[in-house]
Image 1 (cartoon, rainbow, N blue to C red):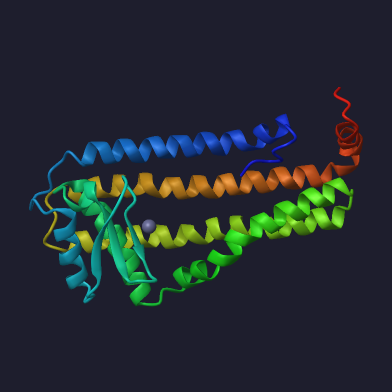
Image 2 (spheres, helix red, strand yellow):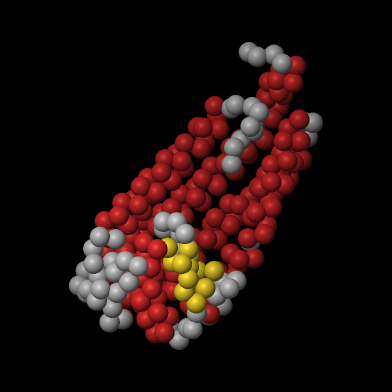
Length: 245
Ligand SMILES: [Zn+2]
């Protein structure tokens, strides 16, 4: 999310850059791990779809498996109880497919068991999608009319997105733990394949940590602006009067 749109503040980048760098590093890690392990054939030569069918059955689940466009877009949707697999995962008999499919089956098992952190996260979906926008408007209006109460209320609304990003972490870590346990106890994996699957899933987990860090850094920037409101009054007035210093 952009800071103001109409007002360029270099301080925003001081707050945002470390988390942005982490996000880029995580993205690079996940795509390089995927690229590496999508070329390694798994011991049983099973495609992602076959792995999904096997693991769902092993967990006593009878769910749909469908294709979804894009790369690394694999996900489980609890609303329609469907496992969505990207073509690269669904059709490739690779070690990467083993790890990614097992992770998504992990989410399906969480859902079937009513795993509390997943339910908590689901309850935050609506507040997290509306909260930041309400917060942003309150924040901007508060700055303009110089009313700090409104600015802090905006920050409170805005923090819904951080809460969501944090609530996502245990759900994702747990799905990967389940995935590795599932693979270990199944007859699907050959020697070293659980470790390979783990490195793909660890890289993917880092992207969620980076997302939380980005959410936190944006929030901290807003807090920084709010606590420096008095000192900024003049520059905002300058801006309104069209004075550029
Ligand atoms: Zn996941």
